Amino acid sequence: MFEKGNKILQDQPFSRLLGTELTELSLGKAELSLRISNKLTQNYGFVHGGVLSYLADNCITFAAATVFDKCITSEYKISYVRPAIGKLLIARSTVLSSGRKQATCECKVYSVNEEGEKLVAAALGTISNMNYP
Image (tube, rainbow, N blue to C red; front, side, top):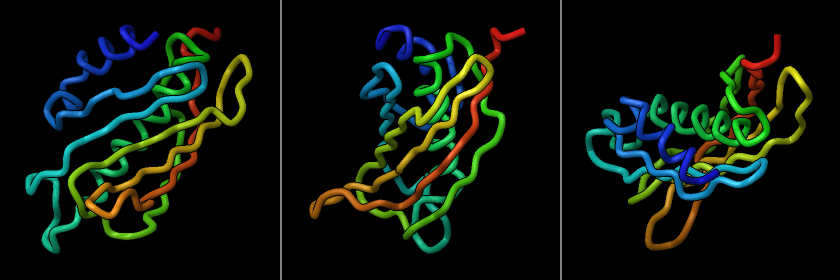
């Protein structure tokens, strides 16, 4: 499962551009990480919200892909909890519920620095099964 997920991540040009890494993939769960660099920040030095949103969306879809072979985000909502600063971002997603057509997943995004992990964003999304007629 992990090898297939890693191949899919490497086939995503935007994920390669950012340097996203798949760090966990198991039934109903996914974890992605991304090193923070100045290129990912906005004018105040915080990681841009678009980067956090991308990471949450992608992680939610990876978690859902463990219950559906082929899937796509239908909708999601993200709440930014605090500015993201540090050395690394970690997104952890879990499938909360799944049926034949769709899954509901949550994702928490953390920034990591010398003091440990801090929650910076939380997302909830609906993922559609593309193999369902």
